[in-house]
Amino acid sequence: MMKKSLIYFAGNFSSKIFGVIIIPIYAQYLSAAQLGDYDFQQTVGNLLMPIIGLAIWEAILRFGLNAEGKELHEIITTAIFILSATLSVSFVLLLITYANLYGFSTLTFLYVMLIMTMPVVTVFGYISRALGKSMLFAFSGVVSAGVNMLGLFILVVSMNKGLLGLLLSAILSNIFNILFLMIGTRIFSIVKRKYFSKKWAKKMIYFSAPLILNLVFGWFISSFSRFYIKLTIGSTENGIYAFASKFSGILLQLAGIINMSAIEDAVSSIGDNDWVKRFENNIENISSLFIQFSCLLIGVTGVYYNFVSNEDFKRSIILVPFLLLVAIFTNISTLIGNIFPVFNKTGKAFTTTMIGGVTNILFSIVLGFFFGLIGIVVAQLLASITLVLSRYYYGQKIQKYSINIAKFLKLLVLFLVISFISINGSLLIQLITVLLTSVIVIILNRTWIIAIVSRVRTRINKR
Image (cartoon, rainbow, N blue to C red):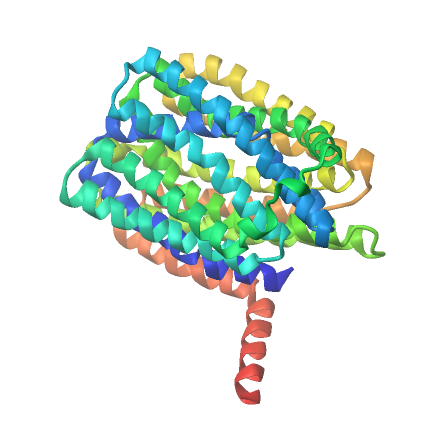
């Protein structure tokens, strides 16, 4: 698992750096309202993506990882046929709907194109993983990030196209990503009419169907807040939220890289005598690592906010610790939830996600009414905690396992202390806090760091 995680990390490093570099561009060249409108369309896309694509990528990974030869070709071909059919219908329906909502214009068409390309990128990414092309999948993020950054510098920074530039950059990024994955997987040598299988179509849809609802309700945990803010408070407040969420987004992207390896490890190692121990270790080690990274991230973020000139974006700093906590608990829930697809209990995954989604909706309405933007963010945090607890509860009914909760609580206290200093301290105090936090993280991970350094030295000496 470590090797695969490093591959994913290396390949996705540029896209994560892109996520950091892009934050000052948002702050300097966009208004909060423009960022809010763009973020709103991405939010809608995340909601519709599993519906448009029938979450078929989940079935591709679940069945494709353990298949080969003709069977693997049948799985991939069948998935592509299903996706093609759903895309055709969805494009027409979505274009008609958006034309009625916004009027037919260039922006309307770009909104639809952004949404339509999102499930396609996901499907081809999962196909590359099912084919064992982890390196290809990882470095597709490099292509995507490069195109997106080039588009932003030309269209947003140089040509000052604002929202139009954001949309065009994102769409071109998705298209180039799709083409890169199609060429790398040699998809046209795999997908053939003769490989389409009604048996696999039924089996894959049956597997993915509960996950459609799971992902939709997952949207109510991860993205409903943006949707609700836009509708009830406005684009400017949604832009403020979107800006603050860029920092937790860095954590979620990194977590996504590791979680890819975690789910693959859980699926491929099922049946091994040490499966439960490996599952426990993955949860504890990965979660601990990301809480520590969050401690560093909030410290660096506090320093960065000293140089933000946009007053709307500057006041979003109070949201950052809450959103990082949401990211932490979301990551833990994903690791714990890996037990459901492994044992084909996707219905339980949906149940837990529904609980979290309903929690977020109810608390967003209540807390948002009384406390505004901060209340909605707190509601999202409560929902992510609920998701962790419900998945742990149902997971225990499937397979007994244990995790060191005390270890997590200590790290969370450390995170809260650093967050308080990062928001309220002077620049000097913030810089000292970042330095001390770095030392603490190194000490906590010294065994792992020494092992990595030793491996590198050994390989260098062999050469």
